[in-house]
Image (tube, rainbow, N blue to C red; front, side):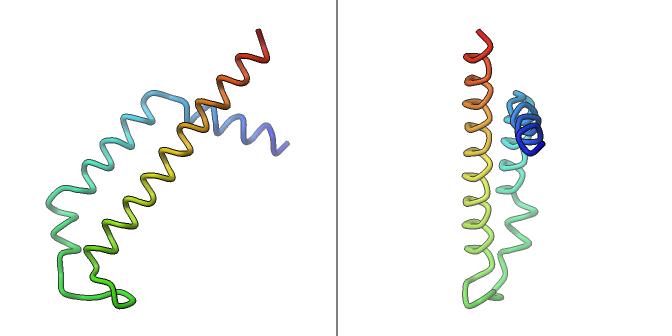
Length: 83
């Protein structure tokens, strides 16, 4: 059962639209309204809010790209096994 869920998620993540959606979300994340919200002198755990926002966003983006690439590899393996 767990393998079927992973296969479904991997097939869903392989959509080209998913890449476009995450690109647009990343672009929006780095534009004025969001940068302005976090560009304040307040600190979270001693780290300026803007730095924390940018580094967490960067880390999450890398994780999402990793998942998308793994989905492509998973689908390619499935196609290779079916041939």
